[in-house]
Length: 279
Image (cartoon, rainbow, N blue to C red; front, side, top):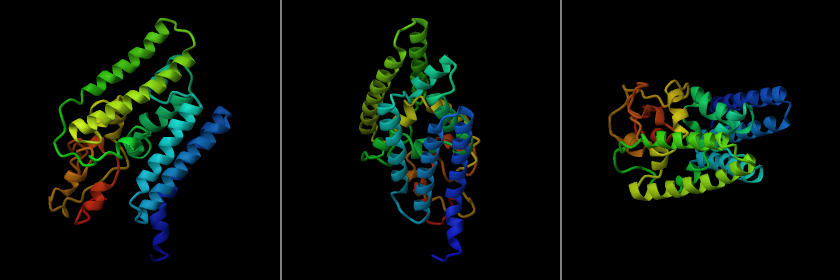
């Protein structure tokens, strides 16, 4: 590699790290809590390293980020820190009127963050997807099922569950929420694995059941970072469509392309494009 190419390859990593570090410093100073500085610097650092590794051609770069961030959030924040980082934790802290833990996580990663990186959370940090992506059905063989409405059911159930806890004035809510995190993750993994084998699609859970996508979809439409297609170079070979784990119509550059808000920025379409029409 020419030395002059090095800054260009590293620029996306440096920009993303700077954004996450700005969030880290802002939360540290405003919340007077060093944890936020460490937390978001670590996550931003992992993402930056992963993107740099991808730029230098390491095919497992995204997997590295998935496990570095996903395991940290599941094991350290969830199991050790006893924070419910699932959607129920977001509702819990929201009802308490506290901007902490899950509410900050959702604001950064799943509500406002998608304006910048779309569904990147799903591709690089989700601890459910990091396991589902290890299953054998990486590329769906059939078109998407018309059952995406189920995600709104699980979204409503999560909201209803936490609402009921407050309305019934259940005691020891912190303990209840921790157990909800444990049981919820077990259910998510079981449902995700079952759906993957039933539909022969690793990402079936993400498409049909995951309640978090209700937050992600609207903002992802306006995402600054997105896979673009130079349609003048596209030969319509269909490789990108067959490769995409989320059934995105990648060879259409319009924001209204089919399943456009589902893109997880995995870059697999870009890697298989024979004419380099995707970027």
